[in-house]
Length: 95
Image (cartoon, rainbow, N blue to C red):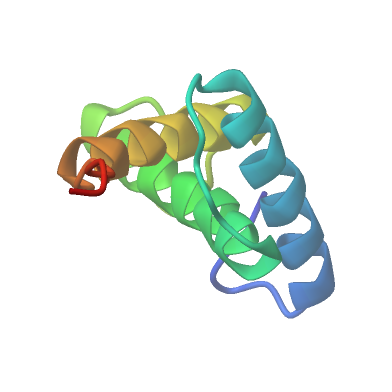
C-alpha cells in the first residue's frame, strides 16, 4: 500500500482495496450489505485510516503507508463503527 494517495497506479490500489474490503467483511460477524464499489472504498478507507492513526502514534514514518494487515484492521474498525450507527430494521407483523 506504499504511496496510497500519491501513487499513479490506481488499478493496484483499487484491487488491493477490494481484497482488503472483502476480507474485512468476511472477518467481521454480521451482514454488511455492500456492493463491489462500497467494499472497495471500505478497503481503501481502512488503509488511509490505518496510515493516519499509525503515523500519529509513531508506528509509521511520515509519508509511510500502512501495510496489508494495518489496512485490514482499519477496514474492520470502520465496519464496526458503521454498524453502531446503522439503524436496526425491524419488520412489524401485519395487523
